[in-house]
Image (tube, rainbow, N blue to C red):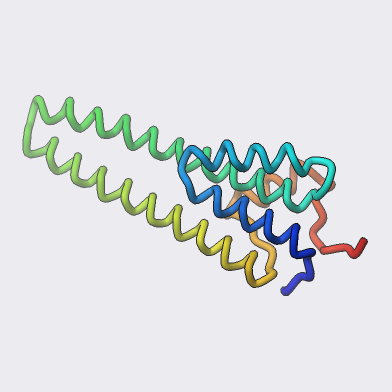
Length: 141
């Protein structure tokens, strides 16, 4: 469904998803957007909030990958072949997670550019569930 957002609002929603594509820095930039627009636009705040939480989930996955990486080195001390196989598998999974993460951010950017609403899987619905003030439909002011 195509929405008619104000251009300024759409630009900041676009920035929220663009910043989300930059690991670590996205949390800072989306936090600034979130604080700046708390009183001005619930939609921009929602998209910045989504970007923050999406990045936190991504960083949690990277932390798990780091723990597995350390475990593979421990296994490598005992059995080099098994450690190498586990380490390679871990890298493949981490690269796949990173590619999926970036493609999801690009898909969000594309949807906002097209004027469509976008919610990250699981995150957007949970945020809407917790904050009933976020509008589903665009209301003309």
